[in-house]
Image 1: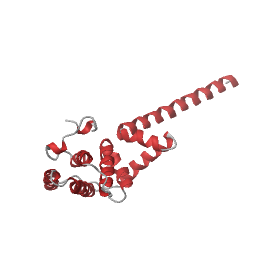
Image 2 (image 1 turned 120 degrees about the vertical axis):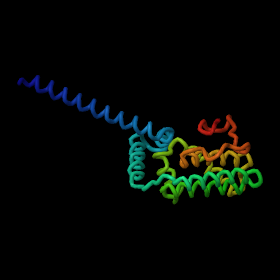
Image 3 (image 1 turned 60 degrees about the vertical axis):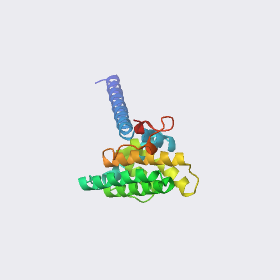
Image 4 (image 1 turned 90 degrees about the horizontal axis):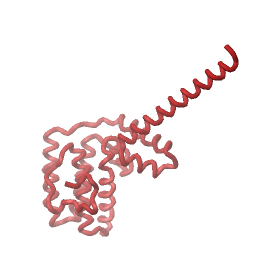
Length: 197
């Protein structure tokens, strides 16, 4: 075999290896984008590089795999559905208190499903693996809840918080808890697509 042939073979092998690495990287990126949806873009924007963001998302998948998640028993699902219906009824008379109750109810549901309920950022990281499409709602609801605890949220914002909590609640529950009441009807100008009817 001549030196030229060896060089050509080595170059061909290097090109094939580079294409294989690029294809694998593209496939992993595509899988992460598909799994995490808008959370993928948010994480990329928050990190120094796309590589760091993808490493963070793969780490979330690893930690998520260590959880013991449990589906809800029919009795638990019925209990949560009834609690949500009661919460919606109470909103009209005490919206500020109801938002706090919605936060607590969602936290209880998160815990019963087997997710950690410590720091909010940890909750988000664990939930993002299977519930990434409703995390924007959860973040918005949590932010309004924090403003409400400081007495800074308007009634309209409180209504929006309940709608946002409902999106994650329904996602965790696996079904719509109850039909939306007038206090929960989304405003198409301010709501995410997932809550539109």
